Length: 94
Image 1 (cartoon, helix red, strand yellow):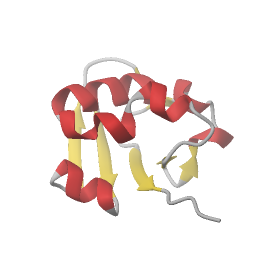
Image 2 (image 1 turned 120 degrees about the vertical axis):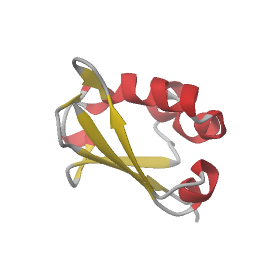
Image 3 (image 1 turned 30 degrees about the vertical axis):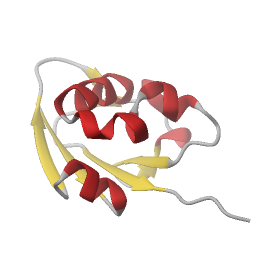
């Protein structure tokens, strides 16, 4: 199956791309996708590691087909052929 990935803002610069098509065999969750991404693009590890994203103060929103993963199954959200995953950096302030 093929998953379309989009990186916005600073993540686009860190990954050195704005779009990526990822071909995978078999089922894949968002958490498994993140593990694979940080292996393939080590510069993303600080922003996209599953441990980082489990933190409530996460610096990155993840959208699957336009829906934030917290309204789906979180990091356990299963991905399907043709899904689009968008990574959006978040800036916290006060």
